[in-house]
Image (cartoon, rainbow, N blue to C red; front, side, top):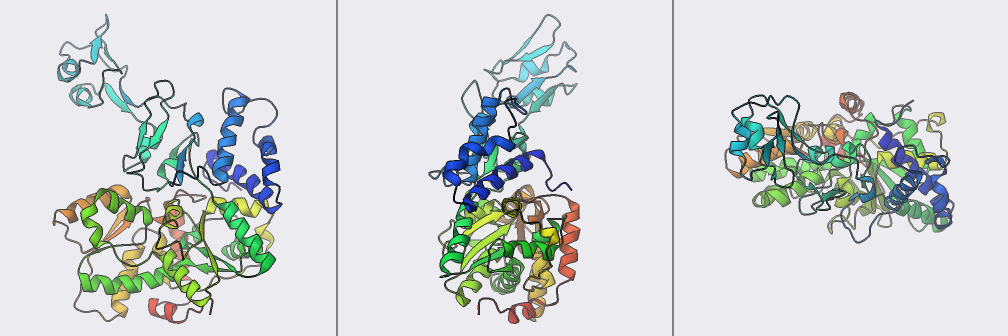
Length: 480
């Protein structure tokens, strides 16, 4: 059965799997030169111009699998040598140009970048073009189009541009704009942009906990896990996580219940709020709408909330987040979160960990997750946070405050809502911000993406034993 959406994901997974395999065996440093054997077979290239380039790119992928550039705090990195197959972005004249007499494109070009051949067909001088697009707007045949690289199209915060290197024109990430959502990672057809992995840290934690038993390693899993690992039952996935050496597995959905309960109280007190759940959305506000920072919920994200709960019950605990989100790897670096969450990995990396130990989770008995409410579990999809806050207000008996929620599905919808709010013309009083389309089920670290994930999340939510948020919180006993 196909596990990943794309072959790029599968290639990334194989590198992660081999790095993890050697880490379990304490043979990592000696074994790095041997890793390419099942990824670059023989001496013939399979994806690039030559096998030497493939091996050079593979070496960079291995570095990212081992934590990447330690000096670069961003978890998203460009593999320069792999970023050379996309055409340069910019405006081009297509063959629908009719060589008309009007030459409106020439008249509006502020830099004189347009010329004509003997057939009166237009041509654009790339050295002069500034990309204003005025020529495309006035062409009566729509013969001038703009080509953009997949990563640029995917990045809705405009953090990606091309380097000034005239030969390679590799992608460059503007750290002041990047929110680590990973959209570029998922969309790059060559896997030239990737997120760093911290699986070595996680493996080291597990091995040390099993050896000296001075602490236990808790896995906290995002509610979007219910739409992943479709080749196995969810209970078998939980058994597989424990078989890796984790002490237990806890639902982040329980943290979502806690956050919904607290955000409802905060919203009723303040009158207007933006959600705190999506770290990419929160970072987006801080970087592009600084005047709106005061309106961000002061609550932790669900990941932070459940980790805090665990460590209060077990101060020696180590906590590892497992989910769909590359931005979570940035969140765990925050001063507020560092004491609570020790590392974060994606579902892609979890699959690599299973296979690095040759675990066949489909043959395992089904285990269960600590229970959360329906509302905590549906945080994984767009609209879920708003529904949960509405439920929490109801449970609080709040009659004087009327929730007018605006679920924002993707960063462009978030931008529109924040623009209106900053100008005082937004009618709603609660912005649920999700950087990924569909919510967390669209995260870059998912194995699969699509509408089916939403249905699986809702189905899993309906299976919750506790139907109320308050009951789920009250009956929770983790690490105590």
